[in-house]
Image 1 (cartoon, rainbow, N blue to C red):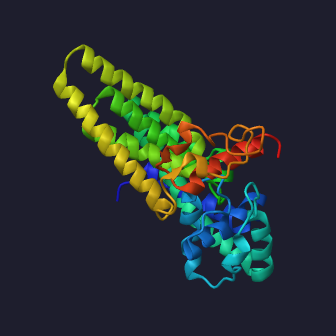
Image 2 (cartoon, one colour):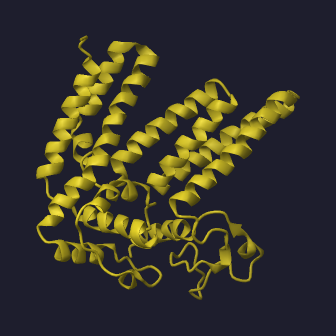
Length: 309
């Protein structure tokens, strides 16, 4: 049997992450993430911890569903606009499950560890394709043994998962720019959608990607390359539909296409001086938003937090 340096690196990383996940106490954020993920699965409510999308929490909490645990009734999750109840939910989760909570957190950390190890393989693939196998192995070693990766790779937070998804999204963007085909554009949009479902801050990259696609369209129009233009338009429309479908699926297709004026915003950016929705009485207020309500309110909640609240 031939020795594989990459598999050895991944194996060492996996053992290190499992050890950290088993013996490191849950961090403050994790106490909110795990019970919130269970609420998503059991009750279909995405209010707890909605300032971040639920994708990572749902992946982490999925194996916990098969374990023996206690969680509060759904009526305890109702909150006022701007309120954050995930940490109160975490306290109640700890009180209900006692010492068993630590075992539940270990179970929830395992899926995140597998995703982190996939990042090592992805780093190797990218490094090898650019500068050869030795470069890929060296990059994989630096990534796998990075203190930051070993820390966040064993935590139920979106950081390490976003790193992997963001890396895949960045590589797919590079591939789409080198060779603008339907397949590459489709893979690019899917990878970026999963990155956004890890953390909404990735939307900034999507805006940059939209500008690049617009540039491609304008150059196709200018050069009168109708075949290339139709191919790009078809790919953009198809991938946009698939992206919205994935986002809706993650949120169980609940409360999509709300009018902008109907959202109970709390941040000063989206609230007028009279403490009402900034779009009230505006033409823009009647625009239906093709995203789940909790995703939009989560972005507003994040902004409200950054304002010092």
